[in-house]
Image (cartoon, rainbow, N blue to C red; front, side, top):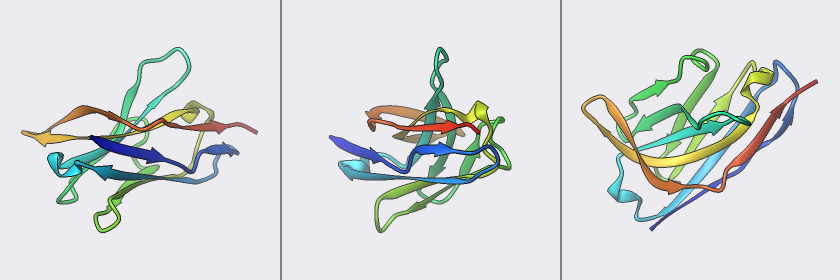
Length: 121
């Protein structure tokens, strides 16, 4: 079993920054990548970014240049640094462990409880 705990959510003004950590525990050695997803009201859950064990990263088109994913392997924690936030970034943000293979990220069934981000003036 993998346990993922997201934190750092809240209300932020447009243009502001926010940093989300996700702490992982349990059988995480099964996976070689971690990611952030988000789900806005009435929308499908979408991949925001992922990072592999060796530091390879990939971002969704809507966040490229604004968000940065990183990880601290010693702490089993993945971070999402979000800059220049807009109201369109309002969503619940979820952490996921997964597998990166052949250039594709495969998500697992291991999800955190999510953390709510609201971008509003």
